[in-house]
Image (cartoon, rainbow, N blue to C red):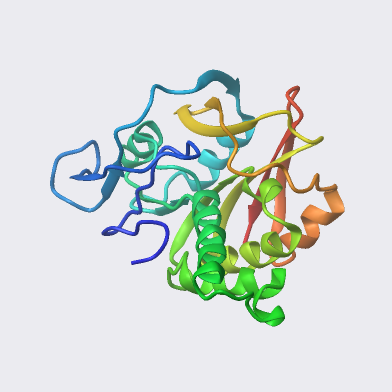
Length: 252
């Protein structure tokens, strides 16, 4: 079993609060939760929600417009398995997989450090370069087939990964995206003051949850750098919000 708690078709995760340990249960839900299977979500006993606000998301609205009509499409959410987000897309006929990549990357790095201590030695230099660690993580996690998904919700994940890991992650994820698939990614225009998670409230509204950080922001990307990351995709639209967030849609 991988570090990201892979269960069934969909991957559930904890709420993303640093330091919590999930106490999972599984529940079948599909197309409004009729109990006929098709998606397994895992939640946890958790503390009350962190500070929550809402924001209008033109990027989400455009994302939904681009995936409208897919019918039983497949979507990968790279954040925690929020029930509100799962229900929103399940009700629209999607099979949803949640895989909290930031939590997985944090656990992976912790395991690597623990392994070094247990072996009473430092790993070989070649094994601990950013390139080697990124490849090892992606070889052990996010293992879905080529062209598995019609859509990806990437949120602001890339801002919190080191540049080498971000580059390999985008290449890995876009391999799993079908031709014609769409990605919604968010980038901070300046270094964020806090760590946020996102839930889909309705067709153009996101719930924004400020919580304890898993990582500090690693990089503020310029437009040309974003284009370089998504070199095998084309940009559809970019929306710039007053909260210093840029929402960008990419089309494979």
